[in-house]
Length: 268
Image (cartoon, rainbow, N blue to C red):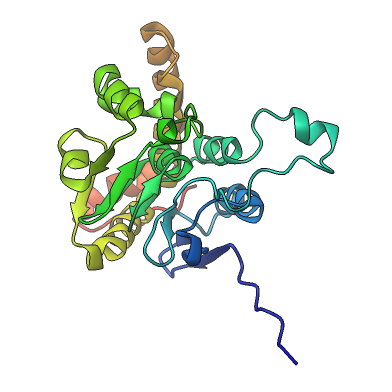
């Protein structure tokens, strides 16, 4: 009698003592390509981390050799049996990833351990910071399949590298190797393959020790700045910094400076 196959969860979550939540896309046999289960699991996991005060920073990575190979073409989007709301939802699938990350006011780091293609490329771009393995590559690649981009790629990419470079990457569908990605500002830095996850965790741990309120409001300001006028942004900055000034974290920072010690931020 043949034993039934063991079903692995599409996403793994682990939290360190320092408050770093690591979300690992867990479909290594498919280079962590997106199927329905993963499309549901990731935004839920991001929302859960965002709502948990014990979590101070988030790392997203992939199991095995890949970061995320985009949509799993072996499991195409199936609308048969879907509700009307599901059929009409323009943000179904990877759009929810991007909104979950945009609304998450905790630092999110992509540890790009292998290929990030299509929606996986978009996932990496939607994170705040990106640490890339030296052998990894970023690939929009949509045009290779006769597709236009999704997953926020056309929103994030021009803002990171400029319109001209974004057009080159998207219209040709070419691969971007790690050295070029670092040179054009597409990733924060490049690390040896075996060190990329440790480097991401070290950065996340440092951010997790920072002031949660100030980090959250800084992310909020960065997000708002994309569509705000200068005057509106100045007003938002003043509003948010006033919130910081009345927090216990600012008092702790000043005390630590005077006492020549490392501050202990609590987010109060």
